[in-house]
Length: 92
Length: 458
Ligand SMILES: Cc1cc2nc3c(=O)[nH]c(=O)nc-3n(C[C@H](O)[C@H](O)[C@H](O)COP(=O)(O)OP(=O)(O)OC[C@H]3O[C@@H](n4cnc5c(N)ncnc54)[C@H](O)[C@@H]3O)c2cc1C
Ligand code: SF4
Ligand code: SF4
Image (cartoon, rainbow over all chains, first blue to last red; front, side, top):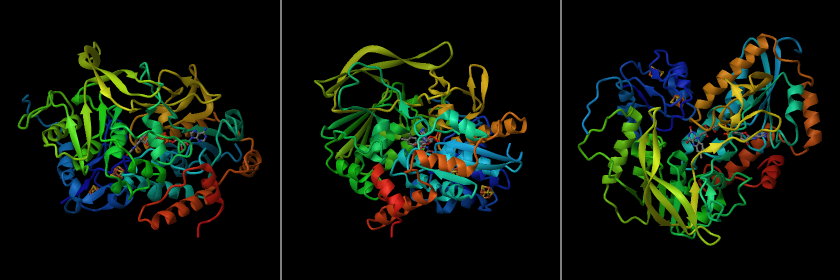
């Protein structure tokens, strides 16, 4: 089901440093780190090990099915971060 | 160096940047770093305590879950209630330690530069934030909340924080660590509407998604958005805007379609609008504003340019939230344009030459940008420079040992306090809060802070 980073994230990349499969982005040396609002977990790579949960200093990481009501949409948002490069519709 | 492998480092300012600098110094394996962490307040954590909004308790967990452990290290001394520049000069610290890292944050802010700005009733959002968070330098301030409309100039997270605090039900704030006097003032507030002015358009709002989305969940507050340029319900807006911006514009569109409920309070988001002048007899009574349009410069950046369309807004409280700014530190070079201590990658520079052994991190290095975690990378990079300089033999020896430093400081300021003092304050505030179901009740004046630092709560 994957883990999900929700709104409290303060982008301190502790989770990035501990994730054994490297599925959290951006890292501190990625180009979009400086402007990033938060970090995101790639649900297709996450192996549900929960290592990131405890190191998070603000407890921003939840198992998808345990996301609090107001942050349900973060499951989709974490996934979307990794799909950004995909072609987008333009209709205005 | 004392034994070639020990580095004595002073870190000035115990905000996030200072805390992360200490953390990185402690992680260093090649040198044994001993750190004195100086803080002008009796309390550590900088803007995590005095900036982050009281209704964001989850973010403040970083104090207990991370910073607190860093302070606990036997190689760290917290030296609170001691202001560098007042009690001790930079030149002295440079002499006493192998290296000094300044992480003093941005103690000032940008002014609007419009006539009438000096009228009473016009303040920096920075001061209002420090006031509601119980910062002892600001707790004596008074904000007149007897008018019906406040105007917040600015379009970032600070502007949204301020708008939320001014409109959210006081019952919600009663569960937080907001300063008691602020709670009382907000109970008596007559403010019904907060207007946020954004210089540029919907696509250029500087706020982040989580802060914007909070508006959708704000109880008993209507949100009003001028929606002319916003996409309609089934329109997909993608343009050349990045993913995070598109998410914000979708939220704005969703908010603008919500029916108004006649709630007792409202937040109005006005875009493409700038203040021109504040009008009033001694006190702010009105703000003259102008509509802007956007022009793309040769550099590709969209800039707001005023049109001829001006209008008046009645208001008795104006808060400018257009940016924090660092101010010059005595004895160190300052980059006036950027409002930071002049530096290259964290090494303080005078002209083109590095000042040996002196470094910066956090907002005083990069300017007031980024979230709490941005300061971690920032501090990491600064500490890397410091350690490289140590390896290359560019640091001069520390003239005093740890005991000598402390007795020198105690002679100058007998009221300085250490970790135990902060722990006593922390315990006292939490105990007081526990009785009322609040995370803590902050001590908000220096006298009370120092008294509780000296006497463990029991
Ligand atoms: C209103 C507001 C709300 C925010 N909310 C959030 C949020 O929700 N989430 C988030 O991730 N980020 C938030 N931020 C951003 C975050 O607070 C900053 O990125 C961070 O605090 C900057 O760290 P700093 O250490 O450079 O400065 P500061 O936090 O300002 O720390 C500087 C410290 O230095 C001390 N100091 C200053 N001068 C001296 C001196 N001469 N001697 C000794 N000590 C001195 C100060 O007292 C202070 O403790 C917010 C910022 C503001 C202004
Ligand atoms: S649960 Fe494990 S694999 Fe998934 S993001 Fe966290 S650390 Fe990485
Ligand atoms: S550890 Fe927590 S706060 Fe830090 S980047 Fe990861 S989710 Fe965000």
